[in-house]
Amino acid sequence: MKEVPESLNKRRFVGLQPLSFVLCFVASLLATSAVAVEKVSVQALFKGMAVLVIDGKRRTLRNGQTSPEGVKLISADSKEAVLEIDGKQDKYGLGTRIGTSFAPPEQQPSVQIWPTPRGMYEVTGSINGYPVKFLVDTGATLIAMNAPQARRLGIDFRVDGRAGLSSTASGIAKTFAIKLDRVRVGDIQLKDVDAAVIDGNFPREVLLGNSFLNRVEMKREGKALMLRKRF
Image (tube, rainbow, N blue to C red):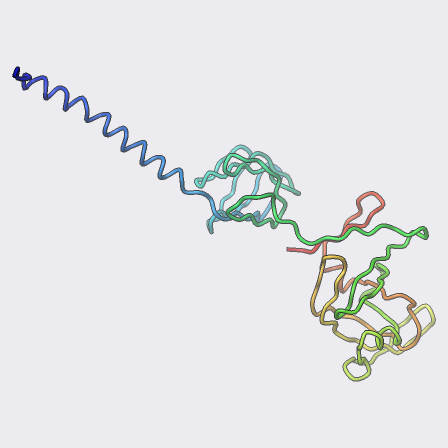
C-alpha cells in the first residue's frame, strides 16, 4: 500500500482547522441570536425618541437606533412609537406592555358613547353589580344620584354616607358622600369610586361625573365620545 507523504497529511489536517473554527463560530452566533426579547414596555415618548424598558433594562432610542437586545425604533412622536421586534413592525402607545408572543399591543378596556338626538351622552353600566343608565356629565364633580336611585341600588346612604349640603338646580339640598365599591361602564370597571346621593328626586338620571371620568382617558372621535381605561 502506497504511503501518503507526511507533508500531505499535515496539509490536510491544517486545512481542516479553519473550517472547524468557522463552524463553531457560526454555531455560537446562532445560539446567541436565538435569545429573544421577552418583555418591552413604552415608558416615555417624544418626537424622534422613545424611552423603553426591555427585559428590565431602560433604553433610550432615537429614530433608526437599535437596542442591544435587537429592538429597533423606526419612528416616534408624543403619541406612539413604531418598533421593529423580531422582524415585525407595529405601533405602540405610551404605557404599552408587550409580552413574549409580541402579538399586537394589548389594548385597555374602552367604550364608545354616541350622542342621543338631544346631544346628550348616555350609556348603560352598573354600580355594585346593579344595572344603571348613566348620563355623562363633565360638570359634575362626583357620580351623583337621587335618593330613590340609591335605595334601588341597595345603598344605605344615611348610615354609610357623610351628610352635607350642595347646590343643585333645585336649590340647596342635603347630600350624602359615599364610596361605591364597583362602577362599570362598558368594559371599564373601577373600584372605590367617590359618589354623592342627593336627598330628593334630583337628578333624574345617575350622573357619571369626574370621580369616574378623571380616572379614564376621554376623547372625542367625531361625534362619539371614547372612554379608555388608563394603564
